Each structure stands twice: as C-alpha cells, then as structure tokens.
Length: 243
Image (cartoon, rainbow, N blue to C red; front, side, top):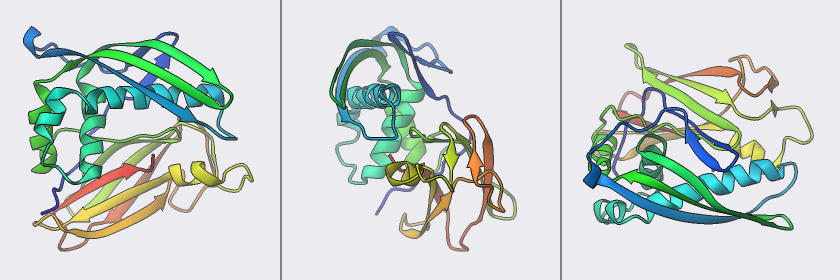
C-alpha cells in the first residue's frame, strides 16, 4: 500500500544569511539526549537565468536535507519506506521544524558549480512522531517549497474543496521569454489525491498565478490562492512543488 498523507497548516521557510542557516520558526526545546549533530554537503551546477546567490541558497538547502536524510535516526525509522515523495516530504518537514544551530562550514564555487557543506543540531526524537503523522493523515505540517515557490498552507473546507495558499519567492512572469525551462516547472503547484487504501486517485499540476483568472506576473512575496474540488473517493491529499 502506498502511504498517504494530508498536509495542512503553515510552515517556516529556510533563509541563508551570511554564514548561518536560520529558520523563521526554531524547533522547540527537547531533551538533551535527542539532540544529534548532523553534517551534509551538496554540489550544484546552475544555469541561466539563475544567479550564483540563488544557486548557493539551493546548494546549502539541499546540504541540510542530506544531513537529515543520512542521519542514523532517519535511516532506522524509514528503512521500509519505498515512496520517495513521502520520504522527501518527511525530510523537508524535519529540516524546517526540528533542526537548530545551522551553520555553513564550507562554501566554494568553480565555474557554474557551487558547493556547500553545513552542520546542524537535529532533534532525532521527532522522526517517529512526524512519520506517523504523515502516514496516518495527522496534523503535522509538511509544506513544501523550491527556489521559485512556497506552499504556505493547504486545508480542506466543509464542502470538500481543497484551498491552497502559495507565495512567490521569485518573479514569476508567465509571458516573459526568460521564464522558461526549470523555472517554469518550479512554479507549478502539484496536488495528489489518495483513496482510503493509499492508492493514487488523481494527480494534477496547477500554474501558480496571482488570481484564478490568470494574472501574468507574481512578484516576490505576493500570495495566491488555488481552490480544487476533491474527488469523491479521495480521503487524503498531498501538495508539493517540483524541485
């Protein structure tokens, strides 16, 4: 059976400033024995129109994800997971809510390839709780973001309509000639619906526009709302963005 999850609420986003990784909402204090030092690195080749600053941000974000995904606590709890999307969502949730003291320990750049190495303190006791919440339709937020778009919240209304709020992180110009390639893919909201057995019912892609009628430009920081009718046989859903 394919695990299913329901994503709702809002989450903190990752921001890199100077030589530190800082989250808008720090993880809550946990017992000392659950605090584990983790380290990860990532090498990333970027292309136009992406800037070197954006590439560094992406590399350091992925380095943190690597640090979490390769930690012993995560490997032990997720050994039986075969759903790569579920695993990715779990790692992103842990990184955004249950990590503190993030630091960039090394950065380099060779041509159009950037490298980032980070270390952080990971609250390992949270792995099981977050995993259970995501595979049983719990309330643990597991929202997603990439370099262009952030999913702010997702909730189901009484009539079965799924309401998704998203925020532009880059200028999204649907008519601009520069708005092509990977950035075009990154600015779509992906929605998967599952039945009560965890079987995928429907998967859809929705352009992140400012209004339902389709404004052509979203500037950084602007927010849009997407309303989607849930299939009658769908019990859970997943909202995500292309990395």
